[in-house]
Length: 333
Image (cartoon, rainbow, N blue to C red):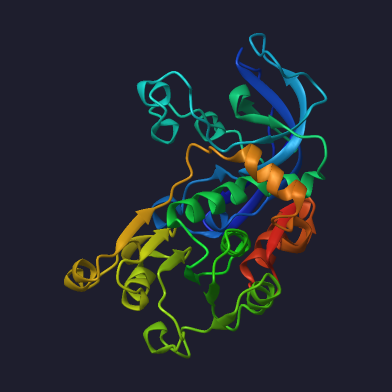
């Protein structure tokens, strides 16, 4: 079985043996896997470590473990990158998002830039009416659903989106669906594909923060909701432009110094701001994400800019890094 591995910024294709299933696991033939922004990050602490990757998956079940019920070979499924166990105290007290025994293929170490993978059966969500390349978008769309949910967007909201990658663009569509009054987007003009897509998806206006700092932009209204899908240092800009009582929801990741944000806490206090961290693990909205893709609430095909085969994995990664041309890049083994 062929699989791709990362070592720093290098991609390595290898033949590896298939592993036997545990009773509660399934074997999935990978049909499509999206490249996530986290797949492109180079964590300096893992630079010398060879590791499998790929977690936005749609595929077909090839085999089920002896204890698996309700799933059978031949079913089309997407996989949640993490699922609530349903058994711990948090799950049983209706707080599945605080599950203390998350089930995930990350724990197994079998990931989806490969011809096949093993996953906990609990992570599989069947689908029948979407193409695999669109269905695999349900994983990042679940993240977008969470960041928008936490922002509590209303018809009177004026929203600023900082970072128009695929998740940010999905969040833009959802903010419009929630009836946001106005939606502005902060993105570098060199990321032409993202800027063009933001305008096509209904942004009122886009701004390049390298040309005009956000606190110098004339929005013409009070920004009471901010969605941040950029690294932590950008939070200080979100705080500075947010109006009194604004809600800021955030999913950005950084390493080293980029993991930190320095800001005026007095201003944050006196403006009565709220910062809400979004971390959609375990995933809780995969069926809803599939529904949104099915109904066109989020235009999945419009977000897919490139498709590659597994033996083109290095080219796929290079393309995904080029935001002037790429939106969502899909690998179809």
